[in-house]
Image 1 (cartoon, rainbow, N blue to C red):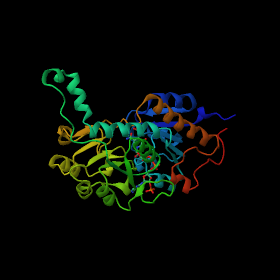
Image 2 (cartoon, rainbow, N blue to C red):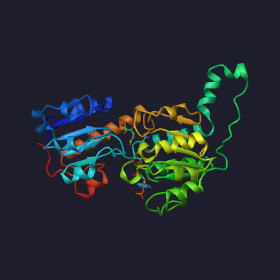
Image 3 (cartoon, protein in one colour):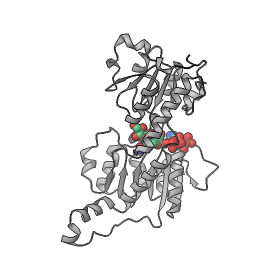
Image 4 (cartoon, protein in one colour):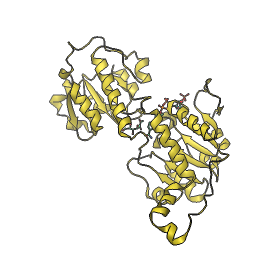
Length: 330
Ligand code: NAP
Ligand code: 8YV
């Protein structure tokens, strides 16, 4: 009989409450309140065999845990974990794809609509009594009608966004590193080309070195003065100072952002702008979806120590053959 209560698992910093309860039901959980390995006493470090976490795990922290086998990342985007480094040490990494796709796509469409039709300030106009005092809310210069949406990152989430946008009557273009053969949408080999061809540019790509500051001044200039930028992916994919400059000068019309370069800090200049809609990284943040994400983290960790194939290893772990523990914990 497998006894996972003998497996010490480190919860590296803040973690979803439902997910934590699920982990506690199974493993010998030790949680630290901040993502700081110094909070794990040196004498306890050799015992740790698994980590559950969200956000950033420094390589130095990983390297101070000599018997670490697996990292369960709460979130599909695992740019905060160096999965190649983990693989070089024989440590598997899992993430939480699929279970959040539809929720994130719903939020993306809401963000597009809020931004294009200025709905946050219109709501404030009604709620504050301004409608009764000063009359109707001004007509919005932008509309979704007749617009073309360009998606950078037509993966699971990008495709779910495209399907929704299609039903809204939008034409869809996209840019990935590799052209897909299973979609009817127009492909662009470069992000610059995509930005020049569309009215709304939406990022649904992963963070990390491959997309670092990819949305820069040239891309925003190509999007143009009637263009709208929406980011549901990662803040690191945008040159944020260049975005602020483009919004301030009218080089683009508006932006809707769920993610930022240095969360939870949002630059004051960005917060001061009236042509932005700013969300605090909530695209997947419904309780049901977060429960599903936590369950998938726990499922992966249970399967690993039970000697079964992982449900969602990241590609770097798959490539290294880190998809199943050689033996179950007895
Ligand atoms: P996915 O299925 O792996 O899709 C990622 C897409 O991005 C793929 O189509 C990939 O195509 C493309 N891509 C990767 N690197 C690229 C690059 N350098 N340039 C252009 N395209 C690139 O992942 P997903 O499940 O859709 O999730 C996407 C991302 O959304 C996550 O990594 C995460 O950062 C973000 N996210 C945010 C939230 C939120 O709360 N705001 C929630 C969930 C996810 P190629 O490989 O062909 O390039
Ligand atoms: C979460 C996300 O907000 O899955 C992702 O990549 O960005 C979001 O779903 C995050 O991972 C939870 O901390």
